[in-house]
Length: 578
Image (cartoon, rainbow, N blue to C red; front, side, top):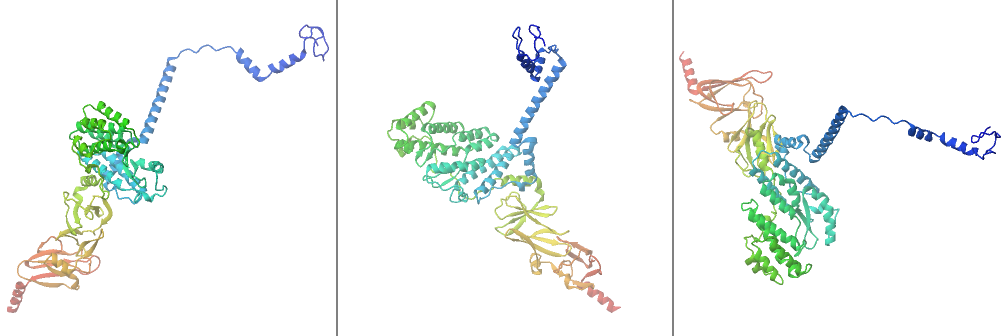
């Protein structure tokens, strides 16, 4: 072979050239390296001629821009979809839900006395959901809506009566606390469920008992947007100062935070003279000012130094220069250990109720918040259908009177396709329906409700027993009591033959009845007969008349003849003379 470097001939198996010293192993190694696929591809890419720059295309750029806008629009639509799904108002779901309540007011939830904590939370959640729908979609005027919202807030105050000795002790997951640390731990655990319905726990002085209180932040966030401007502002103020300010006789917030709360409430009170919750605002202002003046932190300086209160007092005077509490705060600055009760009375410039009646919870049972709403919706849909009212206190019936106030135990009967639906005193439809047979009818007599069956010639009365209603046949004696001037004819006493009934001279009223309840739907009245208030009551004024009836199915026709005694005697005399 020949040397690739100098060209001279050398042995075939030589590793290097004897003439120039060139090594043949480097060539072999380089050949292996350069023959590798990675090297070939890399080399190919480097040596491949570059393509010509792409020319600008207006149409292609326009289409790309349109595509980008479509993608952005779809992303925005997806965001709105997710937002509305979270808010529960996608495609007007909320409005449709409220419309279901309008169509069936019996679905409107009722705030009920709880038996367990879980039951209270579930019930309160249903009530709050409907309240928001009502405030948002109802056609009622603002005053009516506010009255309903006022009822809701009043019932929330009653929840303070539920504590770990009654409603909360059903939850055994948490022990009764003994210290502040233990209570704080329990408070956090309960907050996971209570926060969903806007409730919080507050402890008593010894931390051995705790009760429910309203979370003002929840109320403002949930309902503030549906309120008038002044109520919205008030709810926002309460949400801002939601935290309790005192435990035992010590502050649990900083003095300057409580002073700012006092200033904010005073400003609100003085700028909203005719506010619907003015008594409540006055009570809150008084209670916060009283706590600030007489807290043990100020008088005994247990946890907070005197200078901290002095700085807070001075900051209040500077922040609220027009406050009518300036004299009180000025005196607090100069006094060594606070002021006396008599001094407070002389310095406090506003009228107040010492019992704080406006914000004290009522200890009565929880009341139905939506009774008026339910009544209005029911009357709007079926005012003509309400026909009878039952008053439980007097055990009496009367015609429906929408202006009459109902109490527990009272009911209303509304006509429907299936009979008469029963509504309770809150205008909530019950699961009872009173059915009448075809052709039967109700009628009122002596404050009682009776049902007359045209087919069976029976009169029944509607009896109430522990909230349920059932029919009971009225006896002959009972019929005579409510129809005293009518002659009763019990046709069950007659056989299949025709009968003649002697009638006194002149008009006389009769009633056909059947104590056995046989079927007499084929009877007809003929002659000079006047029908009474029921189809089986008739007055015979002629000398002779008759009643005919044919039983349903097989059987002979019956005939009943009414003949006056005078006419009968005359006929017999004429026959004798002949």
